[in-house]
Length: 264
Image 1 (cartoon, rainbow, N blue to C red):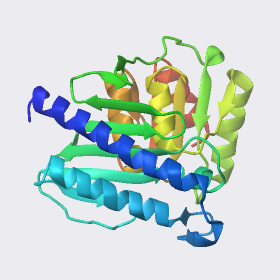
Image 2 (spheres, rainbow, N blue to C red; image 1 turned 30 degrees about the vertical axis):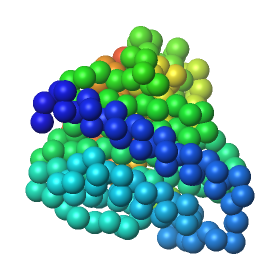
Image 3 (cartoon, rainbow, N blue to C red; image 1 turned 60 degrees about the vertical axis):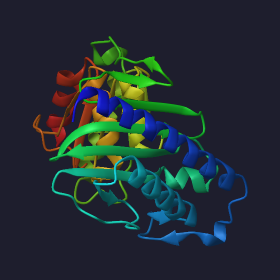
Image 4 (cartoon, helix red, strand yellow; image 1 turned 90 degrees about the horizontal axis):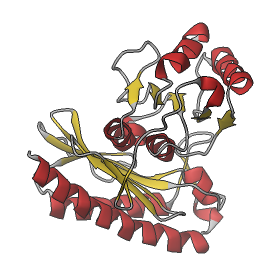
């Protein structure tokens, strides 16, 4: 798939994401809390997630009929040997249900397990982040780059709280304390896709989290990489696409990785 094809596909996906985002925004104004379902203790889903996913799948089938799907809510699971869409229809469901920003739509395209395109649409601010392989990264048609700040003591860090800390509770909070003491501070926004996009455009210098899924991070990873950022797992390796461990930074990756490895 060449660059021109990828660009055209990506721009069509941004239009689709904005359309479905409008549906999410409208539903958020009158959402009925009694229609929440629980996938786990703190892992919630609503009819808005499911309907958004159906709308995205339908639109993506028109854009690229031969592609398969990996979707969070499992409304469509068609695997393809070569092309596959990875979709989170509402990343930040808890925020959405409580009427808080941010929440987003995340869509990635993979070819033979290589990220080729990514779109993250942050619904509340009407910001669309997107990238295609070797084509750069953009937000609302403007080119974006990671922050030039290269020391942690001048950095703002973002993280998330996994639904389960597994057996890593002590390590997780020790890392957090270290960053709080030695940076400009930390934030927890509630959408991994947005966190990655905000690192890509320089609002944060670093993001880390664990125990996520591929649909949480796939689109944001490509956007950040195309914006000049670096992504690894907590060992400094390349096992990050499934979301089990991810550290994504601008120019402070080595220093941030050293902090994580002190405790992990």
